[in-house]
Image 1 (spheres, helix red, strand yellow):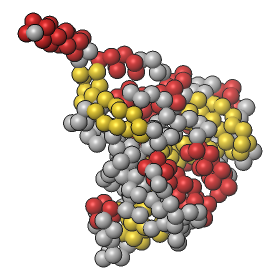
Image 2 (image 1 turned 180 degrees about the vertical axis):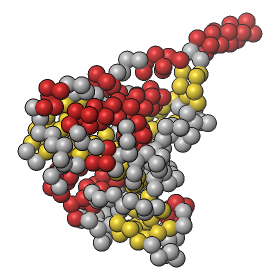
Image 3 (image 1 turned 30 degrees about the horizontal axis):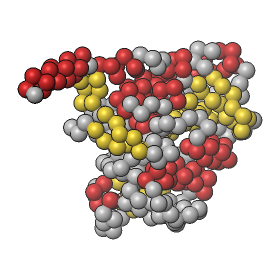
Image 4 (image 1 turned 45 degrees about the vertical axis):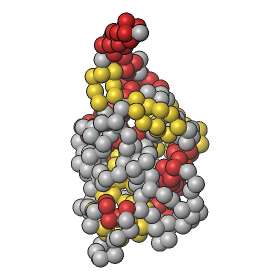
Length: 333
């Protein structure tokens, strides 16, 4: 028995040494994580050498597709590719308009709910260029370390695409509004951070928590001229603490009225944002910290601020709490 145990330990040691840990994204190694459909997966939060090899399979420069929607083509997109001037020149892109860039989350794609909810809301509110980034070739993996590395690579690729677009058309970074959901929320910040010049407006919709707590590439308040975060499933799918210049915690930020699952809570961020674009509303009251927002203890400060919308609130900072209805219209004014 001792010999068998000794052989087993040697074999296990050989396997572990053959695939060493190269990065620990979280003190706890294993955790259950939900995908876009609400299904649970047991994920390993420690990056192994073999994971690094897997990231080499995803090249966002060639794999990412950028789908352009405008009021001239509100339903059927025009695909744009990095460095393909012909496609750009034959498209409806207009450099005189503002441009919104949408970045979906984990296990999602360009035709998922995030885009189908926000694209029509944006186009109904203003004559914009709306570009939905399809990075599903990098996001559709249950291997969390690989997913995060792919997110970082894609964020840089999105920035390079915007830089190329600006040089090709004469548009400027201040005309851009980058909007991301879940892990795409962190990618929106990464993209803004790597654009040549300051992006005018960046919105992170319930940016992911798992794997990002101590990550250097998580969303930063200075990723754009104005940065805003909407938390709707914090401490579960979404990041707990404040990340932007302004952070909103609807209903305390974790459990949303009318929802019976964390997946629904997580999705509420883009439903609220879409409604804020179309009809406004969602007046937040100022909190002393994200902790008091979660505890609904924000009645002593006088500050009020509108959540979301198309116009950046330059110069504003702080944490805000608000309540919503359980069904549309979600805003209580």
